[in-house]
Image (cartoon, rainbow, N blue to C red; front, top):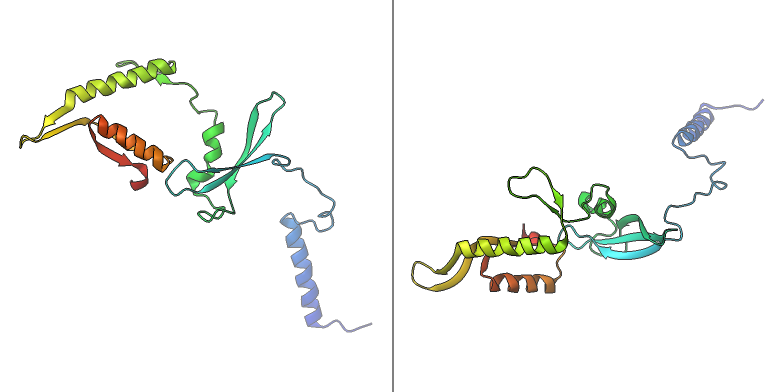
Length: 194
């Protein structure tokens, strides 16, 4: 019978403990090569986009697939590892970007709550856009300032403010600023600065 040293016993014991621990974590070395998992994004179309939440501009990869009903279904949204901005990482808001498109709580149609009412009503876009224009005009007319205390012509409205979204492109931000200045709005803000 060969000698079994204390060092050999520790080596064998450590190897056995490691194998038991790895098996407990889900590593089944015997079956690792035989198990093949079908991925949710297998054969999906890969689309690249930008996160809509802030001005950092993190890149996203969205995976879509055409459903049996002919509609495109969003399967997964994740950070783009080839992006120099976020290198595949996303903040908590960006990581929840899929919910922006697929949440069952997402409002799909314009809702309007009349003054004094306690319930929301579905309205069409024409009604909502007309209502916004009417309210904007009423507020502008009510708070319009033609000249300041020194008699200088200022032609501004102080009852309306505009906040631009961080997902605006430079051109959209420029256009929105020009439109708001034309209407006399002086309180302009951008989400990227907030």
